[in-house]
Image (cartoon, rainbow, N blue to C red; front, side, top):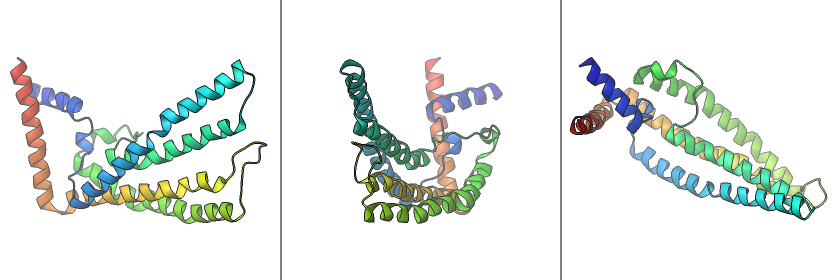
Length: 214
């Protein structure tokens, strides 16, 4: 039995890499996660655009001896959009790197409590602060017509500055979705029963596949 359990855990780690950190979905979380996922898919298109801009800039600089300031600024603009836009997507998928080496050894309930405290006491206040102070940052750039200080640089600096509060709004929505899943697991017993049933089903599928392959 012990050997079979190890085999199942190993198989689940391959098929369901974040299974131990997964939480039961709620109606709200499914709707929000679908929206955040779609937004993440659209935002991901900035990466091929960024690579194209970098390649064009390199070719122009080293083959034609002509560097473009606007292309150089576009590079960090698109990088900022891709990085900030991916934060909410990673919260949805629980794919942010966790530096705590002990976390993966905790039982699911302990992880859920860590999520509950971390989201409620740390991430949510931090996100609200960035939105609160980011909006005046954008409004000031728009009212003053702020543009790049470099000759030939990009105008309308408020556009890229607006990415920060907008991305934090997406992060906030993703955090609310994740918190609803944490609350569902910790305090709603019915959803915990459904979650255990789902885990048992996944385990049965994996063990069935393992036995079938022998």
